[in-house]
Length: 88
Image (cartoon, rainbow, N blue to C red; front, side, top):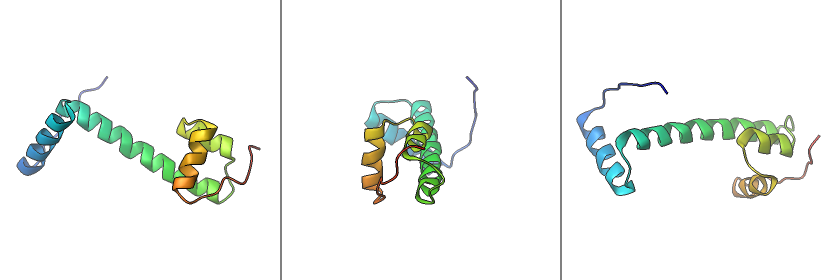
């Protein structure tokens, strides 16, 4: 695991500190989870775009996002995208 040192504005640090206390986690855990979430959201948007453009089959979408077929269908429903195509 790599160590990263960052500087934060005082107000952001205090907000982050309060948030971490609320979640019962330390600041590095909160930052790590936030970074992982941001990256996953970016991957999700790209994969959904490819799926909508019919360049990605539903099973490939599931594999890319690390989700089950059922979870992908739930995601597609939440994103107002229908799962009409099957795996290629």
